[in-house]
Length: 580
Image 1: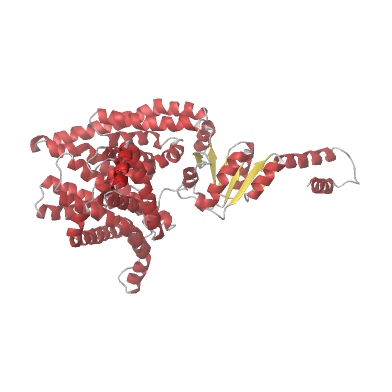
Image 2: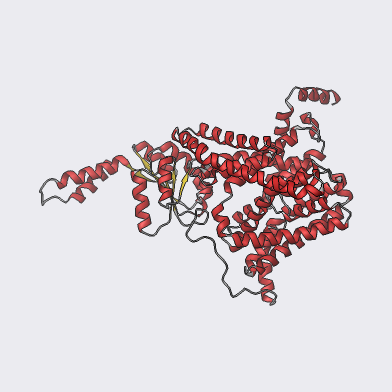
């Protein structure tokens, strides 16, 4: 056995530590997450637990690395960069404009109240004022990823509570960007020059964002137009990754931060027609490195410290959930949201989140926290994030119980709504039209005349720009990408129509569509009988191009003869039945 261990160790030494670590992380994450899915827990919690298992079960020796190895934080930083890039893409100025009241009042009050409470406790425990403020802000931040994913799982994306959570999350996101700018000056500057230094940092950051937007508008957007016209998926993805890395590098080189640079890169393309296509291309990369980020956080958790202080961990987690939940609930009731949506939003935002860990890591780079404090926040983040799905499922029954006891009532004033008109995130029971050629265009117009909401998926950038100007919901996206189908709201759609006779693409997309919406009606086109049979086997309602052309030609030919003894429609039916 000893010889086998020696031989195995020698073999491991010949494997790249990076490859070995990625293999161990991915395999462990899959196995642990599969178990958590059965308990309806977030995958992010599974990633954290995977890191805890790897770091505390002595598995790192298989990779030739240790907890202090630089490979792990470097991969985690890439995960943060991609996370900030997608945050920039998803950040909508239009949404912020229509949700300013919830974002500014609700988000500001929630973060302010939580920071004062948590920071006050930290200050009373002997932390320096700067550290207490950072800890207070870290506790005030929530896990947007867990909250939004839980709303999707519960089918509550359009619930007023989800909208309120999104508004508060927007404020938290803006705050994180601001903190990345000013955090160094809290630790490095004297109090006399602190205000001026922070002002200069904010000004430099704003100028950088404006410059990035101008470059994107007049330089990068034309580049994306040129790349899109090549119809090359590989080149488009390469351009997107290069764009993200290039602007992130520029942010780091200007002594701002890689995270701010990545956010600026996402902001550059957020209002372009390519934002959804970029999201569908980048999401798999983001998910991979986000998983690595959470696993790397889990690797830092020392179970011996946790087990020695398990009472404090449970008490701290319970206090965070209770205090943040009450703060969110009280704030949303203050701005006029009714009881049940407020309760649901309170459950979704009661935890600390991924940016809490990023903020503590950034601050620790200037002045490390006490190991016990870091362990406490790490474990409490994992526990509170794991509790969010259960809290959200129990929010409605608990609200009904309070209403029955007369402790909760709905306000008389109506709940504020989002922007007028439907957006892609809100559209439902709609028709997804893949391809906007003559067939797709005619189908789209016919459905709209009948009052049916439609969404077009198209890969011709010129067509997409034209439809966007006309106000037609449209995505520059490929229907064979699962992320693109999710962005199109496939789970809420009534029908999907593939209006191009490219059978291979239709056949590739159909299983992805069925996986997300088994009840959706699918239409497709085919030229030849063999293709018709293939699509029908997949459950597609097929429009046979040659058959339809034959019907049209027979009908037109018979109408050119003045024959009263012939019924053209009967001849068409008989001929088609004979051909079949």
